[in-house]
Length: 120
Image (cartoon, rainbow, N blue to C red):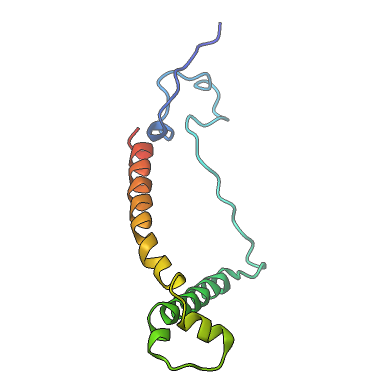
């Protein structure tokens, strides 16, 4: 006859069970642990390059969006089609401030969903 265990909550995954089928066998641990992948010392780690790329992309996006939202209105015409189109635009310059309301809505619901997940 096999013993049935009730489903354990995620908080107690590292705690041993009171009754376990493996209690007599020392080869199986009484807990579950995620294994981590360890990289060899000979493999070069380029994670920092991805960090620099992310910082550079964020800075470029921030500078270009601040120019489109604020700076282009104070610059005279440049005879460049793209820059003049950004200057005379009346739609996309308001897109980011208007969607800030939606950002706040999704941030609050994301926080609440994480709280429900963590404290279930």
